[in-house]
Length: 120
Image: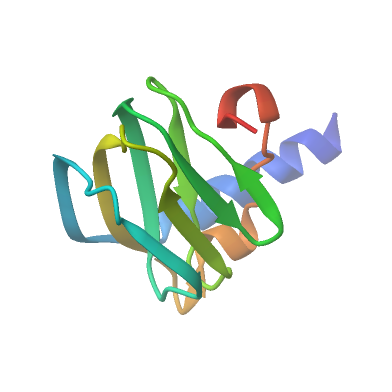
């Protein structure tokens, strides 16, 4: 029980100092030539897929998010993305930073990838 309380308190302490900065956002379909291969962004990305098909690679994980699924692409991690057919994604998207001091939130909090939810 003490370990759980300590983890909860530590998380509360971290999150109370969290600074989030949204740098860009939108909702749009992507072109059939939409792609970026092996780059490492200095910002995080959320993609909420509403239609279409595509491919994401985050580190060494390949994902194929489907409509209704949310993908997190954290900063500082090698990434790739691409349309994969003639029906590319339509998506809500958000580029943002999330820092606690100078540390990226997702360097402190590792979110598990669930293949059933992430489309893998």
